[in-house]
Length: 100
Image (cartoon, rainbow, N blue to C red):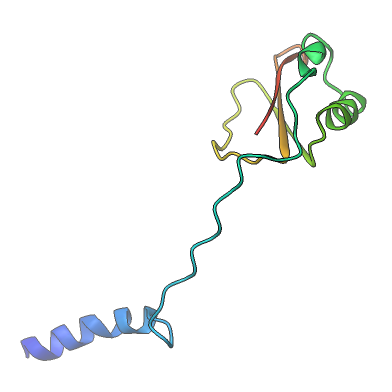
């Protein structure tokens, strides 16, 4: 009886194994260098956040994507060398602009 129970417990685990027994491939390590540049982004601090300002920020930084950070908003801590993160306060005034 105990062997039958142990066999039934192992069945779902066996179903999780791949056909060749290997797990998923490890993704390549992210490069620490990318198209986004922090140089000169301080000039945007203090300006009102808007779609137009976002376009200017993308052009000035060379980033491929823009992420707006609202006050108190939770954001992932992953680093992406092609992303610009722009934080703003309750008055929609930019408080920081940085790559990653």
